[in-house]
Length: 114
Length: 114
Image (cartoon, one colour):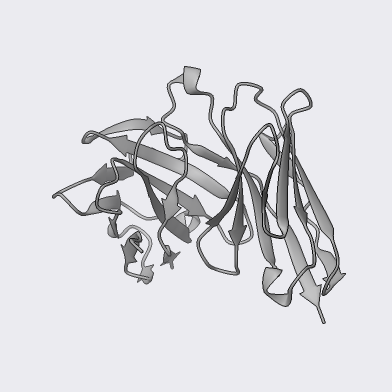
């Protein structure tokens, strides 16, 4: 089983649409969770951290379900500029001695069209 | 806003040659990382570095790889004898502390081995 699994997409949506991405992770001891955004041939950029209580940042809402080892990202009112690959990221198990290495999913591509 | 910088942006080298990729992490950060991304694949952890020594390394980070912090600002990744399969984007990242899981990525160096 992959450490972090995501639907590769692509998700093709019109401007203004609401789109949801899902992610599952295999290590129940993972401590921290993130969504990163990556534009073509660019570096990953942190979009938001994900907390158990759920958190929102403008049009973006992230949820974490530790029991199901499931993370989600909801984007409301999609903009053309949201077109990118969205990476689900978890940290390694701290008890393994890791210094917070990030474990990336392969990403979900989003294409927003006019 | 402080940022991680990397040089060069693109490096072309012949198989068997040594390359050194350079990074300047954010100045008050203490934890440093290298990741790589082969074209079309996910971002993969290579190595983490703290207090002038490697804290964790992946299976990819074999004897051909080494890291160094030669002075107070630079953090380098050396590949001793490059192989075709080393062609990838190499991203440097840094974070302030072990409690701060957010890592800030540089723009990457595209390494092409011919």
